[in-house]
Length: 73
Length: 363
Image (cartoon, rainbow over all chains, first blue to last red):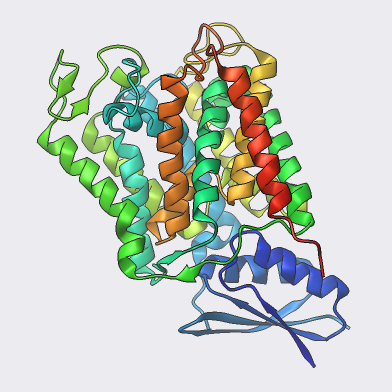
């Protein structure tokens, strides 16, 4: 299962805070984060890596970005 | 897969901080006021004076750097397909955060950039300002941790995103139609200081080019002085902080080379030695910046990439500059403005009201 964090339209540092909360407290091994700016995409990806996760994919569409984060076991 | 943005890397942000660290002292060398090669708050205040929002004769000049910041960011945003018109995250609250951010900054006499540049020029009063800035940001992070936010934006018509860039373009047109005339305090609709900091400026073309270059690169790197401390406090993350540190170190070295480094507390340019008020003024600003999500420079760069809420914060700062000088809230080298203390208290009351009301309990 994958948890989804919808951070679209939220400004700094909310997307990062929501992502880190999910990494720390969520149980799903995979997290999908939705953001709408390149800046948030970079910040979320950077935060995920610094919390020991891997960013397996970043997809862009008209709505923004979909970041797929895989938690370490 | 997404292209890698080189300026969003550690070395990218360090390079941008270092570039600002070189350009600001050089702009000072070429005419900008002391330890004020670039100051977003002071320069917006000068613009407010130039268009008559206040009548403080010594601080009236349309600062081309500010115009350059917004337009440079606009160009970068379009070039890299990041222009995204958006609006609607509590704009009126952001407006007043801008107003009080400016009032706090003018009690200290500088924005975070200038706080760093003052320290890099040997003005040790800036240490109190920076400490206050960090304190204000720290208060803000307590609310952020509890879920403070101003709500989501939604996408808007491009014309909403163009508003602040168009206004900046309009100011540039006014400067070209009504250029400064030697010895004249006014040309057409624009005021020009004959003495004081407003009369000190680098040549127009150099100021605008420096502004464009910084605006372009800061948009790419997301340089933000408030974010630097916030991310350090909140996430122990040093990414933005490394850019800030680069600015400070490079500006200090450049000042030493240019013989602009004058260490001490007394007699510093456009500064006062009221330690407590340097601290408290910047603490108020820091709190406003963190609640609004960016330092004054960052708000300009965000405005350039289509963020209408950031643009409203900028307008709040311009109006705040009007209040600051019309109501005698702004400091001067002689000391505090007559009504500075009640204004600062009002600012803190306002910030705490916003912070408490906008903090959601975690689900």
